[in-house]
Length: 129
Image (cartoon, rainbow, N blue to C red; front, side, top):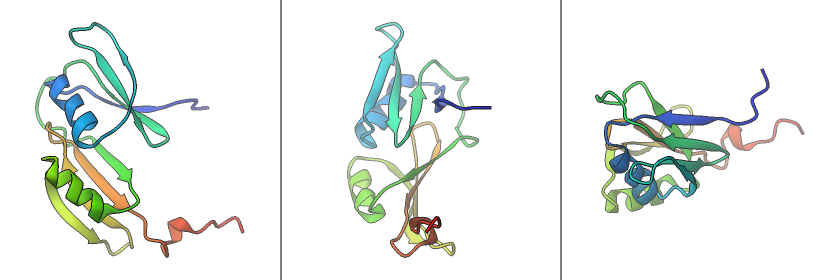
């Protein structure tokens, strides 16, 4: 299979509320909007991928879906996200595997892992050389 493009799809119970979280709290840039003006779907840039929030889900928490977002400075994002009203599930801390992680949730309970890869971590080294 050759994958030309991909995106994570969320179908939340309240799309407008969830779209506002990803746009206004996380600060993701909008790639495109589509559909009817009274209930548009929104596709956000998500690093080299995309996140689409559209349609209506059956309800319930989004425990099965998770997002992994790498940032430059987890502690700075922690302060910004807390000030913006994000639900902080776990404060930033260094994990045994060397990444610095913080966990937050969107309004529907979708877990978002915000990750910083420290400079000395093996993920930062180019193994081709």
